[in-house]
Length: 331
Image 1 (cartoon, rainbow, N blue to C red):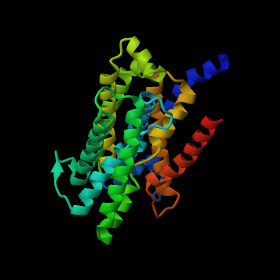
Image 2 (cartoon, rainbow, N blue to C red; image 1 turned 180 degrees about the horizontal axis):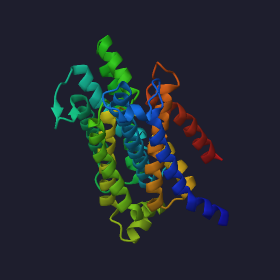
Image 3 (cartoon, rainbow, N blue to C red; image 1 turned 45 degrees about the horizontal axis):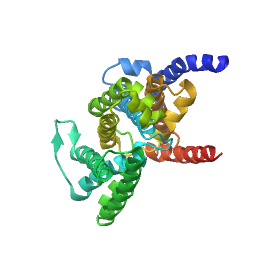
Image 4 (spheres, one colour; image 1 turned 135 degrees about the horizontal axis):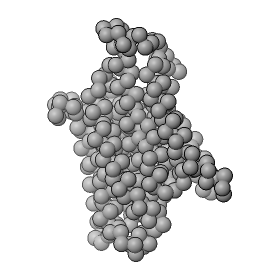
């Protein structure tokens, strides 16, 4: 027990070091080598590659990974289910539905100069999925239990998944190819506009999770215990669900659906720092960001000059993790 306590005490600084190393090293990794002279010298190709392509991509990947990890952590505590995550409960699928409609029907507009028609449609799709899940969860009146919302989310995920396939099937070859590429998820950006657009989602979910860490600890122990300790369970559930939906909607709008990050990272961090959400929140933020940066660096370099979507890589890793988790629970 003493050794375990020492390891957990040093786990958070180790996760911080891992995250910083990923962010510091990843911009220098790629087909074209970039040196410090290229970075400091203005006008060179190496400097443009670093400042306009690689650094914004690394920062966007870090923000996206951190946001999805925090959303997964909140959902797992809220539903008291190790398998709960935004992509499993219909929020990501609803966002994908909005993006599929935008591509299929050629929507063209911008919001605040930051969000394109594709991004805005994906965000609205996530909000639609959230509204439908809540409507299904409260159809018979009364409060909303974790089990009801969980089953409603799974049903909505299948619904929007089937609608995505119907819309995709009705499109032409070009639209179908664009939908297929976007649905794989990818971190591709030029400049810092996408980074600025993704930052509010991270700040929203981090502040919400950090301020509600005590309530999340009590939710894990059961709704009855939480209510006996003065937690307004239904109102808190609404707040947390809305915060997760908003954050996921922003990220899916910018990067597409990137699966299994919100499922894997909270489990890994829980084994490192324990189950206290005040510490787990920081660990999920740091490890999730570094993990997705690492995956994205591998996705754009291992098959160079070709590049695979990072969502395909995380889904491949996550499928094995999911099976391992199921087998461990069965034992």
